Image 1: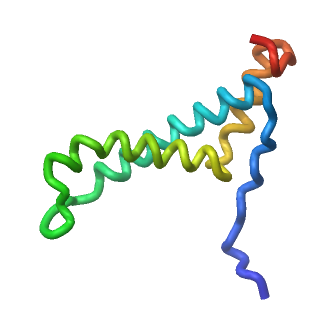
Image 2: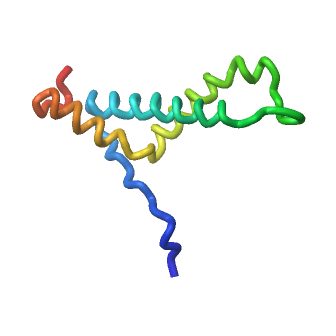
Length: 96
């Protein structure tokens, strides 16, 4: 019997429009900010403390995590953002 808890988010259609790229970029920034907040909430002490080097590069790591999430299946918000961008442009997905 399949696991009823596992639910996969639908992948965002990969189009070449500017709206899709902007939406994926936005999702990457959003996911990076979420990752940064999560990383800041973890208590770093003992053997797993990276010291000042870790503190310095934690933001870059969070940004890269967000970008990788957006390049993959994402969080599911890019398609909604893309739809709003297209709606605000009057239905022109590729127009600048």
